[in-house]
Image (cartoon, rainbow, N blue to C red; front, top):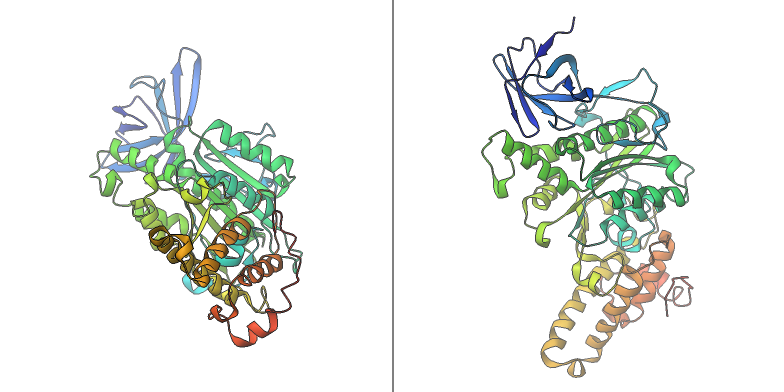
Amino acid sequence: MAVSYLGLSEINGPLIALEGVKNAKFDEIVELTVDGINGRERKIGRIIEIYENKAIIQVFEGTENMSLKNTHTKLTGHPLEVTLSEELLGRTFNGIGQPIDNMGPIISEIKRDVNGKPLNPVDREYPRNYIRTGISAIDGLTTLIRGQKLPIFSGNGLPHDKLAAQIVKQASLGDDTEDELVVVFAAMGVKYDVAEFFKKTFEESQVMDHVVMFLNLANDPVVERLITPKVALTVAEYLAFDLGKQVLVILTDMTSFAEAMREVSSSKGEIPSRKGYPGYLYSEFATIYERAGIVTSSNGSVTQIPILSMPNDDVTHPIPDLTGYITEGQIVLDRGLHGQSIYPPINVLPSLSRLMKDGIGEGYTRDDHQAVANQLFSAYAKVGEARALASVIGEDELSDTDKLYLKFGNEFENHFVGQKDYENRDIITTLNLGWKLLHILPKEELDRIDTKILEKYYDITTDIDTNIEGDN
């Protein structure tokens, strides 16, 4: 029998304190009924701390209109759960999993704790197959592997929202499989116009039927942001491990999640750590990121692309710094490239996919993939050296080889990294374009490519039409 309590002992921001509580449990959901002028208002909260007979509760909808006397609190006896069904596909929900698309609730007997269950490391399978995004800078140089967690490091004002929408529209498992890639998209703390941009883009591109959206807007309660990624990942795990689907989870923006955590931590009076964030920021990130992977007991997989905006473009800030420890690489957006109107402005040199080598090559993409990627990285690094030298002595004083590297750098940025936001390149087109760019350099400069690969592809790719818009 559920017990209800009348009145509260304290209200502090999104937190309330309730005394005289018996048999309360950590992470338990409570139902709150507020008696107000406009009738009764219902809210839900989560117990986050227990001191003897005192419980501290986070209120998801905020504590507006609540007072110490007019609130009824009922303990439910279970943590926050989300209803699961294949009918989730094509639907839009708020940050705690409640429908906001006027299509009614999900009817199902299957409910799961949003906190999930730890994956047995022994049951994990090593990620192998790649996911095609249609974006050359990602597919060619920082390949996304099925079951990987590969974050995008961005900055304020950079087009990470546009890039996220393009990935959702174009992501696929490649041309060699009939399996469909399902996308779980979770936005935290986004503005209303950004949320509308995502919804409109997905609907117009006709991909909404295999997308599940969770939207927490900037004017929604801060506490809700702490739950949104967990709800999204619970849905993703069900689609992947119960229904055997290949699932791509996009989480944007993890900086909003971390700032919500800092705000709630401050309300609780906890001792802050770096930049005011709580000391458990790392473990919270790990709890989210480590829910990606492949298990031997299922044909499905969960792949994550968390997006985070670095305050002041500082890669040493706690949010990107801690994320880098947990994830398997990063894709870095560059403000300088964005200033040159290059989209997507991906800086390939600090970008990295640690699992790339295991999901490319013969049998996956093409046997020259790793060699082309290595040579493009090496050549673009030398572009930076040539540009630095040109800034000192002038471009006219450079050697002929250095001048070719400058030309290569401009062509690489404009035609390999840069592409239209509706341009969906397959992996063969990307690799052929890489070869075409390498022909700008003298053949003896291609020292990162094995002789057999060089003999096989160097001449036959000279006349290949890559069908790249804007290609000269």
